[in-house]
Length: 563
Image (tube, rainbow, N blue to C red; front, side):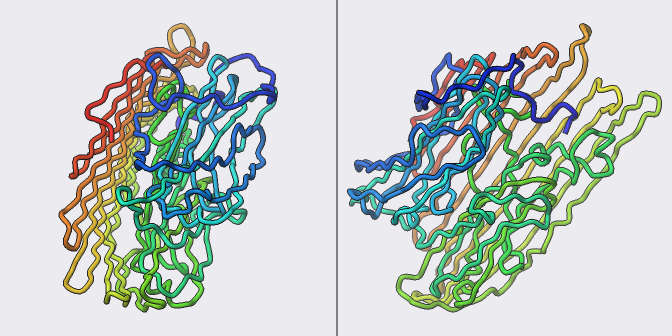
């Protein structure tokens, strides 16, 4: 990463005394964007609700986070809404007191299963940010059926320099099912996959894993793993990283910019999850990210890995181990996952196994270095391109109560990062480092049940483009100019056994730019926008764009009716 792209203080200010905890609490922010506000806001839609009246279970209120000790809470299922549920919605509200504070990771667990994972917004001496998040957690219904102990973990340092205290509320909304709002099929079992302490595990190297030993029932029919791998510390700006032989010359992190999440069962390759390049609200330049943070910054989307070809293996009555690692991790990634297990309710035992598995144990990225050294100026200029292209097929079968079912997962996972450099490690000025990165996944899952076939085709694309310059102006002030374009693009097509095809498309894009005078701490030419679009073949439509200037929301536009 560029020499100035590190974890700085969010804003230059005199040291403030720690905020008093007495009487402080969450300030509820509007759930819709407010023009003229500097509160964190995103274009993403709220979770759609059924028409039934929910039972609301408050997990905690006005919980203060001012240290690194996780807080615990008790959960009891709602007596008046025993299930089945048409939908379960997690909601949370956050406030950070005005002052100086880094962005922090926010991770909430119930029975060690992850129910929320994201990061917090940075405050300033004149801004106490408040924001609202929510997500559909219906697939986690099994853990909500019994009383559980929960954990809320937002590690936060508060002292005479870092003064922002974080407060949070969290609740679960349970919507009873009825004829008009039927309950969807949900997993029968949810198995958390975390670190040794039950929280997200730290992956410092390629060899490090989080894992869980399984002894599942003998009638497993479908299996999925929802994975989050969060870039932290040296890996926070992994997309700026370079080969190890160039780290000193280019003043950047090592192990190249290529990272990939690997899934294994009993030590053998079972799946791949691309790493999303999340950028936190203190990332690169904090003025880029308020009021509009980068994609998913406040609420990460897990990536779902289809492990159904291994259902027969996992049903054999033996103990198995599922593990998660990050290839090229360089201190470090935090990783958490939930294993979602569906059973054959009409059979106590299924048999089966893996027919084909061509997934290699590790990727083999290609590195193309074209860096030249100018002995007169001391500059290193040129390009570095790193790419990876993996094609694999995993096929398995199970003998179920409704016949032999074969599931084939065929995927192509692509990665390309191209960086342009003009860096002088001795003089500090001027330096440029531009990044164009694209991660793609093309996936086709085919389920064959006798003569009937069902397919699910998905295309993921994670483009990221960053233009970064660091230097000194004519007045002698140090500055950095940054522009970022980050996208998330997902299209899905499903063909059922007898149902008409279903298609859906989700697109997120955040654009942001800022010219930051590091000597004075003053930003200029600051603007951003964020667009979220969703549509499907059944008439679903959502399209919202937010724009901001000088760190204030200036416009909200809707392209179609909200869902």
